[in-house]
Length: 139
Length: 229
Image 1 (cartoon, rainbow over the protein chains, first blue to last red):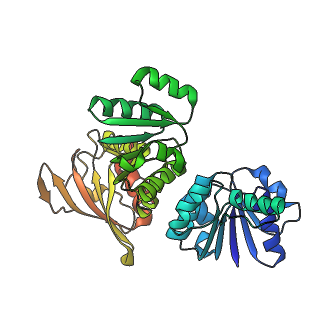
Image 2: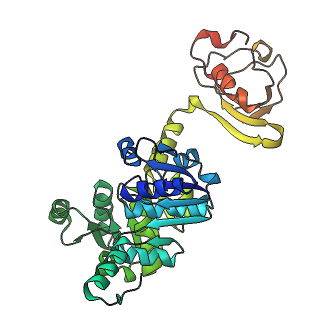
Image 3: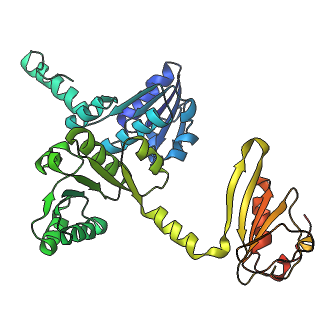
């Protein structure tokens, strides 16, 4: 698979390394060049300094031939916008986005985005580890 | 009408002020507390502090009874999300987004935003209108034939005024098809002389468009007899 990862934070970098190890072709996009240091010196994938909500930058990153797109920047709205561009403009088959705000996650799930909320998942895990019971909340 | 304005920068502030003056019920949502105080001092009790992209803030603002939501923050992604949440979650009939990157216009339309306003585009169009001497406008491109029709308006101070067409060193594979002068249309021949203000329809290869532009809009005397390529 050719996978584009937008945002080279902890999650983005870790995901990139896992995908590369599994034999996938990976392109990591970030606006800050220093962020790529998280990938380590021997990272065999590609990196590009660019803005994931910019049409031209996405084309440069190869979005037209991408099989999958992950939006994992710190900004919910940037992730939501980039994911929708990848999904609706470039028809990338698999698009997953991170949305911290549970209410926004809810709205955009209803709009057809595959969205993960670390807030919801984190709270669920804490709940079950603290109480020994399953969290009543659904993610 | 109840109108919600998201973003209390200069655009949001003046927009809210005009809408209030027009007799509308207006609520301005702004995230900076300091900015809220400034706006409240000027416009009165029409400001709510908060992030308009959070659904709970929009719920507090009574978004479900708003006729219009206008998102005018400085970030396109925020304006997109505010409008989408207003439309999808609160069923606001009309949402309007400010966009900064003109390329986002098509994306916003695709994602269901009724109207967008791009200050970048507006300023560009004014610049283009104000500098008519730069007017070489590609009218039509026949992609399968790799030919385009361009419309050229000769500037008032054109160095080509009085020059016969046969003296023009046109780029290769380019043809002057038609001249419009004072409402009259002329099928030109080699002896036809150009006048400042003429509107010219030319056929060319897209790759020679830039050469045509240089020929017709050159500032120096060399325009009349450019060196051969």
